[in-house]
Each structure stands twice: as C-alpha cells, then as structure tokens.
Image 1 (cartoon, rainbow, N blue to C red):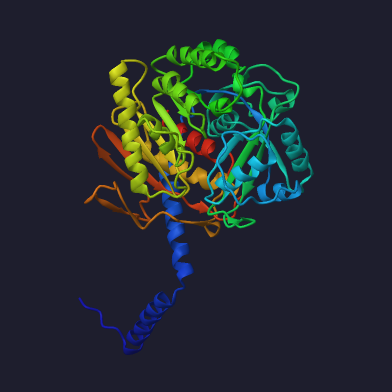
Image 2: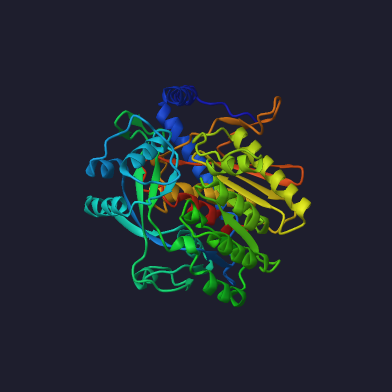
Length: 481
C-alpha cells in the first residue's frame, strides 16, 4: 500500500534532499581528500588485522649482523655548523676522504632526495662531525644498525629474536626482553651519523625533492662481522623459523687486507647453506657502491636466500649488475609502479634462472620492494610465505608509523602520492588497476607467482627516515612466517 506524504512533509523532504545536494557540491577538496585518506587507512588497518599472530608460539627469528649508536641530526644544520659551504659540483664518491668530497657527495644525493650511506676514511673529519652533532640542539641518540632495528621491530610485533652483534652493556639494557644477543661486549659502540632532511629543505642552490637521510660512519668493527662465530654457535639450538642477514653494506669500500672480506663471506655462506630447509632465509639489501663487493654478494649470499628486501634505489642497482652493467648509483627516487614491477619481474627471473643453471642454494620465492609511494611484493605460489595481502598492508602502515614516529596514524599528517591508477607493466596494452579506497591492496597472479601492491600514506611531518626500510621489511616478514 502506498503511503501519501502530507504536503508539508513532502516539501520538507525536498528541502532536506536539496540541502544534502548543496552540501555535497560545496564540499571543499580538502574534506573530500580527508574522507579518501580515512577510507584508505581504515581499509589498510582492516587488511593488517585480518591475520593475527599465533599467541601460543611466538615465531623465532635469528638476525645478524652488527649494531651501532645512531646520532640523528638535521643534515643542513650540521653542515652549516661546521662551516661546510654548498658546492657547485655534485659528485658521487665511493667513500669520503675530505670535507670537499663530503659536500659534493651530500649535494649529489640531497637534491633528488635519495638515501645514501658512506664510509669516512678521514678520522679527523669524522670526529669533527661527531663533536658538532653532540652540540646541536635537538639531536637524538638511538640504537642503530640494520640487524638491531629489524630485531626491535620483530620483537615488538611478537617474535622471539636471536640478534648477532657486539654491543656495549648500556646498549644491551635498552633492547627488548624478547631479544637475545649473540656476540661480544664492547666498551664503546661505533657511532653512525644520520643527516636527516625534510622534503623542500634547502642547502645553497639545492632543494630536496623528498625527505630522506645521508649517513656517514667510520665504523671499524661491524665490517668484520665479529659476532658471526658466537651467532653460529647459538643458531642451531635456537632453531629459527626465519634467518635474516643485513648490515653487509658496512663492508662497502672498507680497507680490508687482501682476502679478508672473501674469507668472511665464505664463512657466512657456510652458515646460510647449513640452515634447515624449514628455516626461511631473508637478505636485506642496502646502499652498495663497491662493485666487487656486490659481485661477492651475488656469489656468497644471494644463492642462499629465498627472500630479498630492498628500496627503489637498490633494486635497479642489483638488476644492473645481473645484466652485466655497471653499478647504478642513483636512480629515480619516485619511480612509477609499472617500472618497479617490471624490474622486480626481471630480477625474480634472473635470480631463479641462475639458481637453475648452478643447481646451488635456494630458489627466490619472495621479493619485497619498498618505495616512498607504495609497497610491492612478489611471492611464489605454493611457497612457504603466507598472508601476502596482509603483509603488504602492514608494511605500508609501518612506513607511516616509523617516519611519523607514532604507532597511531593521523590522516591529517599523511598524503597519497601513488597514482589514481597504475599499469601492471610498461609494455604497451598492459592492464591498468584503479586505486580503490575501500580495497587499496591490489593482488593478482602471473606465471608462478602472486603480486601485491599497496599505497603508502606518506607522512608529511617527518620524525625520522633512517631505519625506515628495516622496520618496513621486518613488519612485512612477521605476518608471512
């Protein structure tokens, strides 16, 4: 039976509907954007929560190697304090020998906003930088190094961790109770200087395109992987579900004696090759420029890893080496999704092709690339890695949490810079996938693997970029072991 509205009620209904329409059309672009970010955030949180940690048995993760104390400062402020003038020649240097090279190297990476890490061979210069950093207001000290940072994230996410590194007693006191250290105690830990800068920062005629960091160190302990023997002794009884290797960039351009580095990597290869088939192995890449070291890593480490983690700079760097080209020092700091996916496919194919040809080590079954705008992951179907969609969502959320310095994500301090839609490849005629706010993680299958891509809610009020990749990679792994 139809119900007839009284004239006054009908008129009021029309007015209310008209008011809603007017309100809709008059909404500011900011309110529409805020709603979009809120929807993406709630959807990513829902995807992350879809998989819970096993409360009965905490996953066991062994992580090596090294550790240090990070002093985090504003990079431009530090250079101004020591009186280092902006150079008119941005030049890449494999290592730093003097102040002029520091200025040239910093400018080279600062303008595009690319992460970098360099060894300072000049002890006097490095001491000057450390002392100036200590005096800067607002400087922060924290536990540093790939292995300790990944260990901290995994412990906080519900894992029991065996950490290979040599630390001071003060250092051990600040680690989680779920982290067991395998290594020697040292009197003074090595110091790494983290020169942070926000997007839009200026130094002379240079303006940074994105927030990032430039790291310098004069580390003479971590290149020797001096906790490796103790780590190896504890490894078998610890019986990890996952073995993670990182921090090998400490070897980059370090002045080893002839044969020292090869001997260390040979020992590491023996440890990795003896890992149980039930233990997954992950290698976390970093900023490498020493081509000989990268070639050694291709021979000693990569064959024994079934998972790789890296950023948008490290992916083309490693790929160029596989192709027989020179090391790519600087790549696009804001690559398109299609470009990264094509590079990931090729790396996945080349690594597994080499595995088949040599019949050594393990096939690559997981590849995670983290960029400023998005997270992308390739996982072999039927492999031991699970929950890929949730893992990519968690990695994306962790990027914001770490960079903003808060476990709670504030949409008013975030923005989406990933395109409204993306091509799955640069090949002509490739499928385009729209970014759906209610289902922001896109997953599909190709050949023998699944690909998942998730947008990042990019933090606009940066607290810290250093350690971002380690936290992101660790968080992604947690839900897949």
